[in-house]
Image 1 (cartoon, rainbow, N blue to C red):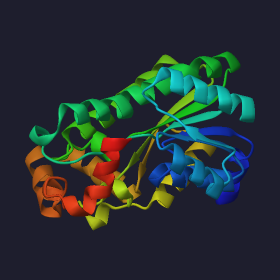
Image 2 (cartoon, rainbow, N blue to C red):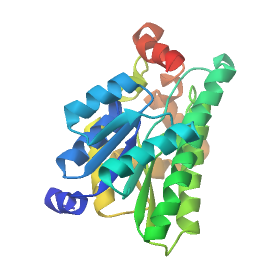
Image 3 (cartoon, rainbow, N blue to C red):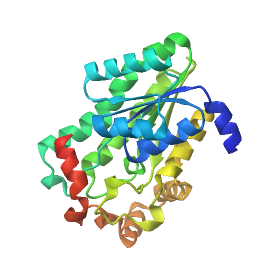
Length: 278
C-alpha cells in the first residue's frame, strides 16, 4: 500500500496508544500523528509520557496504568472528552524481563502477565462495547514473534505473547460481522531498550520505525496479523514446516538459544531498574 493511501486512511481517526512514552509505542504514535490521526498516548511513566506528548504533538498524553481499571477508565474518559470516540485502540504496553525462569521473581512473573496479558484484555473490555454500539472500530494488539517461537530466557514473556495472539484471534471470531476489526502485530526483536544487554541476532532485528509503518498500514487496511520484519515472518513460517530438531539446530546456530540467557546486566541496568520502580 502506498504511503499516500495510508495517510488518507488514517487522517482524522482517534487512535489510542498504550505504552506510548518510549520505544515502539512512541514510534507508532509519532507516525500516526504525522499521518493525520488524532493520537492519545498513555503510559505508566507520567513524566516521560507528558514530555513525549509535547515532542510528537499528541492531542492527549496522560498517566495510564493498564492493570488498573479505574486508571484505564479515567484515561479513556479524558480521551473521549478531548478527542471524541476511540476509532483505534493499540494495546502496546508491555514489559520484557529476560533471564532464566528459575531466577525470575514471583513479582516479575506477575507483572509480565498483568501488563502484557491483563492490560490487553482490560483495554479491550473497556473500549469494545463502545465500538460495538457504533458498529465500527479496530483493536490492534502488539504481540511478538516470541509468541510463536519459544525462546530460552523469555519463558513468561513468550507465554504472555502467545496469550495475546490467542486472545486476538478469539475476539476476531467472536465479533465477526460487527464492524469491529481485530489485528495482531508480531514484531521481531526491535532496537529499543527492551533488548539492552542481550545478544539479539542482527539478522532478525527491526527498527521501531518498521513497526510503526506496519501499524499505520494495518489501520489503513485491516488484516488479522502482520509480522515485522517480513524476513522474520518468513523464517518463522519456515520453522513451522521443518522438523523440530532441525528448527532448534538452526536457532542454536543463529545464537537465539543464548541471546536472552547470557545477558550483560550492566548494559541492561537502566531498563531493569525502571521495571522495579514503575
